[in-house]
Image (cartoon, rainbow, N blue to C red; front, side, top):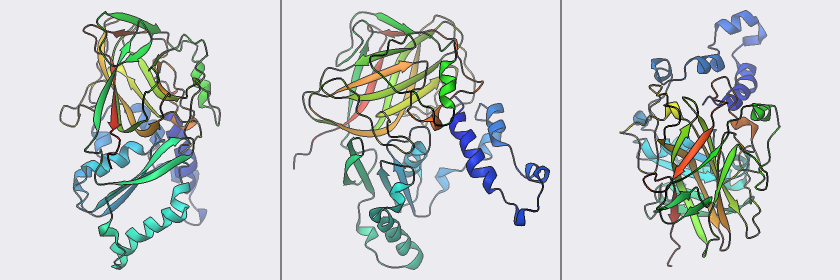
Length: 383
């Protein structure tokens, strides 16, 4: 889906206002002739054609040292690029830092400035800052809100990750440890009135309420956790779903509930009410790149449109963006699947003309329908 919320904001406020115009002498017509209108380009080029690849960098050619600073709670903006670059660039000298909080705040903290100076002084001035002795990965370990601790690691994703499946049960609206034996279905309606389109207006967001009686979403909840559990890394939802039309747009949010069932939100790059993670997929663009995809990370080819046969179940691999959270004992997880994006941030809203507004969706679970959430669980330290 076109990320028009971010693209339109970025184009107007970060690109047009900074286009090269020496002494302000160029006319509006001259400025237009010197640029590609990127929002229009994106709207008219939904597939990964040569028009895109000619404008895309090649990560496999990055051999220079780099420091990649990411944010756990920034789905829809920069997070994916940070992680993919760190994992796939062949540079022998690369570091990854992942923080939480505002989009720019961490770069100006004392600790953030010290890290940048340590990196730049070593590579640009030849000063031995101790950089080469440090672990290559520095991660914020979030516990909710703006709270976190720092931890150093040697790789990402973490080698000790234990991948845990939580199976969807349509009959009980639950996330369970074992695949349900019996087939069941549950559904949600399309956003036929295009209600969520208004959420993309500047600074207008839709607050998530578990108690809200909405036909446009389904909720699946775990039982309370019996021990403190750390989730950190890539997250994936495998969902069997059918549509009343030849396509469907699906939005997914993973949320953290306290012992009383209230959501614990996180301070993210552009909002203070981020869930743990989010993902979305237009079903007709579900085709995967078999080389780049992994069991825990789908990579979409975006090279062809595959329409659906109405009312026929299809398996969808939906990427939830990499994230991290510590879930205390007695807290639970809530998986929200629906036709509206309740991101808590207007910059990550998708409300353009490519949206499929009228698709009623049926979720299929149990039996041969292995709908499940794949979580990266980090085992507790034995030290």
